[in-house]
Image (cartoon, rainbow, N blue to C red; front, side):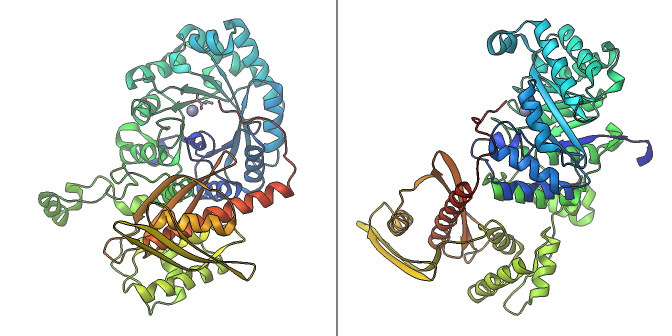
Length: 525
Ligand code: KIV
Ligand code: ZN
């Protein structure tokens, strides 16, 4: 089959909406913009940028992404009620290609216990919602929430009515991850056979991974005629997550002989985009994760290695470079220049501005004094640290000392700088040198910080590898992440605490400058 004969499957990315609903994955506006731009560069067809009525932060993100991103449809979520739909449109109206996504639950369980509505009322509400949205733009998606557990007769009625009212995409969500592939495929086939106007809409599928079947269920839907798949980078999302974008895309790509389908996605951008999402959300990808995990292309067994040396296709169904892994034997070091660093950054998927390159190069030189060979993992860690630093760094680390010794309490001495002035604190407290440093930071900034998560990992291999620390700090009910890298793990932890503190201060300044766009409570579907 030639590429011209293959069916085009639309990739609808919901990392910024359903993905952000993962516990602990909330992102600020700049982070969302950065991810939206990466998704546009990946060439997904639709970016679901948020749920505008849910919070002022969601509204601002959808509005800014609509204003900035070009070449990709930008979508905003709304429940089937006028306030939600009007708010979604308000956020989307500057988009080059806007889409409003309205949803309403249809399953008996949701009708009876959540909505307390009859089937007739559901149909009426769905029709009114779709019509209102269609008054704003042409591209309307309707989702019967919990469709996978909805009675087929009723599902057909709702879908037909939604299309009649103007829906151009009908999304079939497996909201609770209950479906199995055969049943999911049968549901799509059933809709194609029984809904008379189904040809006027694209059928989409939206699977959750509670049973680990989200990708398999999505593929089964494609096999039966779905033309759009909803998914997230690294499969992040509510509970066990959503269908993983990189897995569905590479399954369709690698087995196009079987599915006869293709996507527009630039597969070489998968690994850089996955890294970006992991670093922004702090949700690291497991080593053996398909496609983007560190071990996804590592061959350990002697027999496999022997086969690979003779002929790669003996054990390799995809090439690592096709998904964006860059393999190079070249290591950078003390004598490497700014141009070489920039070249490597580009190969790794980063486009640095002049100012970013200057700052990363400065850190690179400091690292090269401590470490002879600098690998790709080191460079990624340095770049990510720079990219996720708040624009203005209130507090910077001047020096630190940390002591620990068995049987004695730990001690830390810290000197931090703010507005050109040095502040020193020395404390003997806590249950280790990092905890003592934490107490010293609290003393200097005069705030109590509640640490909710701490993760340390090495950026590369070897005893001189840089340690990368991610810290989650709760502030006013919100979770703020901080990251730090250094060849000294205690220093990396201090930098992570300061990074979080600077983000908290930046957000406090921003909130003070800003009137909330709409005083609504945070709602999630
Ligand atoms: O899982 C779900 O049902 C959803 C809908 C809003 C599409 O996320
Ligand atoms: Zn969902």
